Amino acid sequence: MTQTEILPDVPVREFDVDAELDALAKRYSGASGVGMKVLGVLGMPVSGLLKSLPNDVQDGLGSATEVALMQAVKWADGSRGVIKDQPDWVNASITAALGAAGGVGGVTSSLAELPITVTVLLRAIQGVGAQYGFDPSHESVRFDCVRVLAANGPFEEDRGADLAMLEQRAGLAVGGTKWITNVIVPRLAPVLGQKLAAQMVPVIGAAAGAATNYAYTSYYQDIAHVHFGLRQLAVEADVAPQVLVDGMRRRLS
Image (cartoon, rainbow, N blue to C red; front, side, top):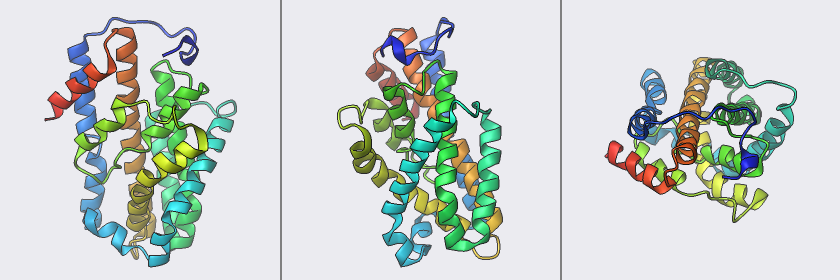
């Protein structure tokens, strides 16, 4: 990490590496807890979510995700000088309200709400990065924030599958728009498809939209805490990132 990635006046502290890894692994393994509870309340299995979407929505999911993500990157970066970072619970409350509004009108309103929700998610992730002393305006940190969105999503129980995301600084070699299109969108599209399907449940669309958005925000903030917590630990405790990820794997096995 270069010095320009670090926000000024961030204090350096002592780390107990094992204790920090224990805490991060616990947060990581529990990240999807809210999402699975939401599915339980809705009575919908994970396997049925994407299949329940109309065919035209399924076919257009990739392009809708790409548009939403490109807009989110632009809007999130542009808003940092205007709107300050919010606590985790505030971000979750904001997206819950957006999800409720999106769920009222079915497919049309849900798709219209998508870019706004992804923007709030990205801003929330940027805020977590700043909490750990990283400057979201720095290019590599911006990539890291977007990369958190490539995690499996809150409706998957296998957290170990996301560890590959933490092992690499992917994107820096690919760069910019091409990286988002080729790396992030294929992973994020089915995750957002699950969200759309859940909030389109007949009759309870608004409640489902609020609940799923709350679950998504809680999940991605947890993953961001793990991601930037590991980065901070690697730098300030002077431990190789791969050693830390291996430590996480042992704790999750």
